[in-house]
Image 1 (cartoon, rainbow, N blue to C red):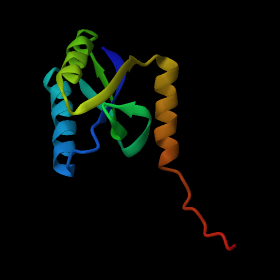
Image 2 (image 1 turned 90 degrees about the vertical axis):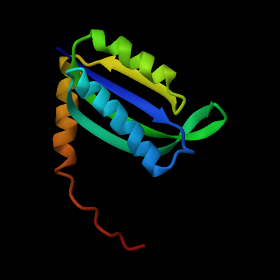
Image 3 (image 1 turned 180 degrees about the vertical axis):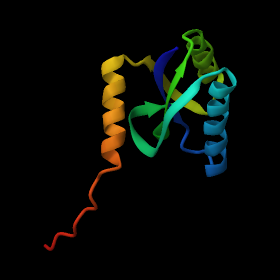
Image 4 (image 1 turned 90 degrees about the horizontal axis):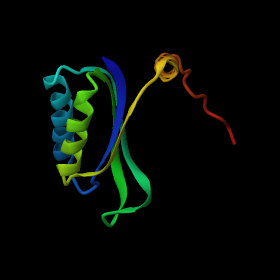
Length: 119
C-alpha cells in the first residue's frame, strides 16, 4: 500500500448539507475500496487564483490515505464525473512528505494560544 493525498474543490453554491454529503461520499468511496484514511482536513471556503466554471471561490477538502495504486485512477474518474467538484489533485507521498505531514500534525496540537496585543 502507498500513501496518497487528495485535495478537491467543491462548488461554493452548495449548501452545508450538500458539502457534507459530497465529502462523506468520497470518504466512503475510499473506505469501501479498502483504503485507510490517515488524516482529513476541511479547509473551508477559499478564493480561487482564477475563475473556474464562473466561480471565484471554492470549498477545499484534503484527505490523506493509504491504498493500492490501482484505486487512484478510479477515484479521479469519479471526481471528473461529479459536477460539484471544480478541481482535484491526487499525488503519492514519499517518506519525506509523510514525515513532514506527521510533524505538521503534531505541531498543530502544540500551538500556544495567541496573546492579545495592545495597540
